[in-house]
Amino acid sequence: MIKPIPVAVFKAFSLLPVFFSAALCLPKADAAETLPASTPPTAVPFPAMGSCAKVAFHNPSSPKWGLPLYLCHYSAADFNALKAQPVLDKSWLPNKESYQGLADNLLDSRLPSIALAHGQRWYRMLSAAENSSSAVVQLTELISPYLGCELQLTDTGFTDPCLGANWDKLGRLLAPVSDLPNQSLRQFPFRLYDNLVVLGEADATLNWQLDSFAPDLQDATVPLLERIGKGLFWGQLDEVTVLWPSLIAKGPLTKRDQVELFIMAIAKEQTAAVLFLAAQGLNPQATNEYGDSALSIAKMLENEVMVQLLSELGASFDSQAQ
Image (cartoon, rainbow, N blue to C red):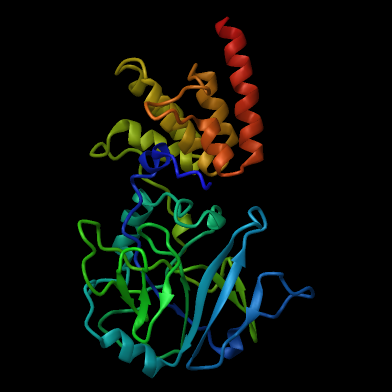
């Protein structure tokens, strides 16, 4: 029997934003990178203009799960025609001002696609007011941003068989989904070589990379506990250390708070952050009202490094308590 995802994970990742879908411009042929001597294991054939193909990304650290993806190569005319079609989310293309907002809220796609635990995401701006003059490559995750069901292809785009939600071929939501927030489909990073697409690698030709932005932990409009959780998640330990006294001044942390902070620290395998929490006297064995602990979440994510670390810290904590 498949164990359901613990509520604590949903609580800890309740800040997941409405992800913007985006397309990535295909660099000119003379700017294409040279294929390295050994072909990366995540390389797939580059589809011909006007065609698409289903591919899968196998994360080296999580080889059990192959993340299903849909790779398309649009001509400029085809892409502009698709972009001109009416959809629910008319501002699906991100702009420079939206980047920091995305970074402030972005956590990870670990829930809907565990195999992408360490995948990076970024976007290249395509002006909504102008037509694209270059061919466009789009690599879309075939995982619903809602309940995590695998998407099905349709004549008009994508559909979620669990909720009945529909997106167009560019991944833009076509109609509201119950009481859930509007979400475009997520796009997956890649690097282009002459006739290959290497999945999950950084592309130096892109102007903006979302992972280069760090959450603003000084934003007082965001609850302090939430800011510290983000800082632990992103490894901003220096800033977390500065904010920590203000958090402690508010009173002892509840078991639920301790669990949430530990989960944020283990989510991206931030060893230093886990050790920091333990050094502050937080209990790595703490459980919340649902019976979830940082250790149980680490086991669910099959992160052996975090499982071992939490087990050692838990044994030490128990010994000190006695």
